[in-house]
Amino acid sequence: MFDEKAGKLDVQGWITLTNTTGTTFNAAKTLLVAGAVGTADGGNRPSFYGGRGTPGPRGNQPGTETARREQLGDFYLYPLAERTTIANAQTKQVSFLDVAGAPAAKSYFYRNPWLQKLDEAVSVDTVLKFSSSREGGLGDALPAGTVRVYMRDARGAPQFIGESEIPHTPMGSKLALKTGEAFDVKILPTVEKRERISDERWRTTMRYTLTNARAQGVTVELAQAGLERWWHDTKITDESQPSTRADADEAVWQVAVPANGTASVTATFDTRF
Image 1: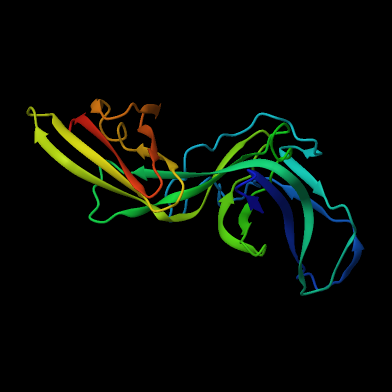
Image 2 (image 1 turned 90 degrees about the vertical axis):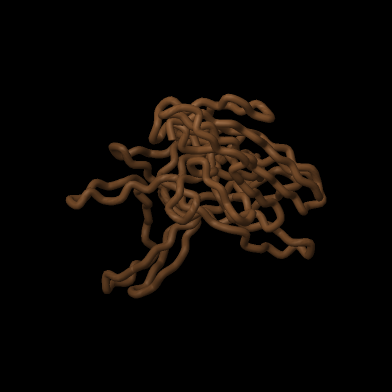
């Protein structure tokens, strides 16, 4: 449950138990063992994604803190506080985590593929950022699963605003989870100019136009990807505001877009193609 105005997050963790054994278990001690178990076919390795098979927003970072949980080899154990009764063919949910008032913040993000231009503006991603650290976070390691996010409307009723999958996440991690796409904050990347400057070099000027129909100003984290993925000598020769090189492949701008207004960023790229 996210309170945007207060910048706080209340988190309840639930385990879904399904009993297909043919036997009812009465007042059973129940233990969740969380971790990626190796299988003969290689198994699955979940990661942070933003939906539609694309990499998620920037900001996810694994932690280095040891949780106060029993460990079994490379697995974490989550004993359920109360005994559980579950009948054959029954599915039920049992709580294993309850944290109130963890710091959290909403942000906006857009990643543009390799110098891509669009004919129509698209919505930027809405991102929820928080931490699993002991200080200023949830204070626990998180088993892989689905994070469903709710906010209260003006009447106080909780409303679902989005969900995101997470992998097994150590304590101390930073999480940046895409919860949806902004209805009223959009971006239009266009190619303003493209010219050949030699037999092997091109100069491309991109313009990224952002619009904000909200009554409050917003900041959009804009990433231009693909700078080093195919050709390893791409250069930004000019830009309307300074970018940071988050890694070799992406340049990132923090773009302030005023309330009920627009903003734009231009950048010129010297590339091999």
